[in-house]
Image (tube, rainbow, N blue to C red; front, top):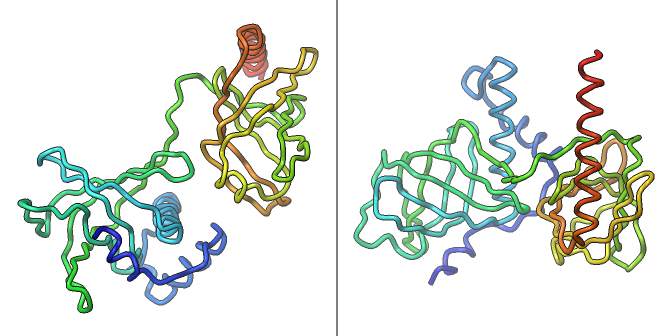
Length: 277
């Protein structure tokens, strides 16, 4: 069965990005720098970000879709079991359903994709080697550590960045039904990003739909809407807060026109200020 091999994954607590960076630094410290990672700052930062994103997928037990470019358009499911920045490989579990007639061998190209916190994640790699588990006899695939992991949210509308003093605020219902006042960080015709005090990760993971929200724009009537959280991240610095990316739902036609007018005027104003500088 597909879940038969899942018990082989050791249980571990989810780690924060800071915790992953400490783990990352500790692992690399066991080897000479020139053997472990790129040395120029830009490449080093990219390498670190790649390892962190992959390790987060390990900690979160994220299922991934596996494709083999150039073959029949079949999609298999697996799990990322381990990330090794020393040996530069990613270990994924057996494929489900079984790959059948397709014999996988070292050198085969692989495309891995998943969705993490509402954001599509994708990377390309190739099979370095195949190992057989001594206990259950099931295969695991060692893939080359990718150069980068793409994690981009698809947007159909331009998103306007807002300063904290823009006065645009959002009121949502908290986990216990209380009203929470949030700062809007960016805004578009169909979505927004906002920051809210406290840790909302558990409640958003359980229910990403936020009903009866109020979007406040200075000098205009409040806009009622529903939100669907597409991504979220809890941060401890400079204070405990959650950054959320969400899609706007159930926006009345008059409110949609009001929002569009504000976006156009604000974008023009930002352009004028940029030209003056």
